[in-house]
Image (cartoon, rainbow, N blue to C red):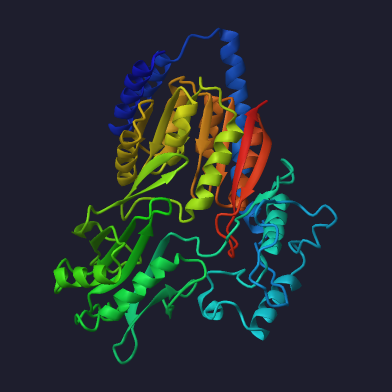
Length: 504
């Protein structure tokens, strides 16, 4: 089937889903119409297989809650000696220490004293980060980088041991100041002096911060300049308790490879006093700024960004590049906060898939189309599905910017889309899935298994939900071929893992 025929076919599927749920007999009729004819024996065999697999799905679903309770709690260890600031072995994928057992790798389930030791060490010695005790964002800031990688690797290996041996961890050469998306909460002290910082972990208490070892240094400098300008422009910071004040948050986004910088001022009102003079003063301090956007959030909500935006300077967006492709980044766009490791992550996923150029790939949970667009030169066709309408809009723009013509975007729930494809008898060779931290759903996985792609590349941001999903996928006729962890978030407990599964 040609690309254009496929496009028309999937447009009909999309229209059908957007019309809402139809009567069951109508759905059954449409599904029968689209599916090729099968012999009675084949039909019986398929029905038996689906009944058997559905039983496994129910078992796995019931076991999920129990699995999550039993999953290893990811805990960090700290070295009792002060770190030297050097990162031995971080210029290569961190190799496993074959001479050490799980217990020695400090991630054994039962060794609760390890985490307690970390807390005691942090309390007894001076941390590299002056905000460590109050903030809680960088749980492993005082653990040497090579030791962090050993601990994280042990955690992933423990969870994925039933399925595969985990490859070496891919770390960073320079693991500090990697965050190119920086958010600061603005508030004030008892005297009304403006403060900025981050929320204490698990609370809405603001911890004032001048600079952070994880954040881009230029972003921190811009935030400090804005904070210093507020009094002279008589701009009040927002007070969550009484609802008074104008400035709530500042968001900085930086294109690591392009050098472009976006400043987002989140306010409760569209009226910004002395707007032009404020912009002029900020640009005088930081002429490298590409664009300044005012985002209006007047709701009593924990959400940072509101629905309305006004561009104060520049185009209202920036660009960055990844794996040779150019991407538009707007205030609300999803784009990895660590662009250096993002390129490593996506190149790992593409290489792992071993593409021939003839595949039809389905990109689920696709965001702004990053993975699908990067994969597009290596496959025949990409079908991309994402629920967030703003992300889909950006994805279409990104495809146009890169002159990519073999990708089609659909605004829809990934699970519903997969179910419809499976029911319609459609075929894909490869599925890229990059679900949220909670992982995928049994319904999505069931539909994917019914769709029967030859390969699945699972990009996970939580090894716990990954292990849970792999249990269900492997019961559905797939086996794990490879698992490679990538350190996207040094000095924290977060772990990204790329897994390749093939149909048995």
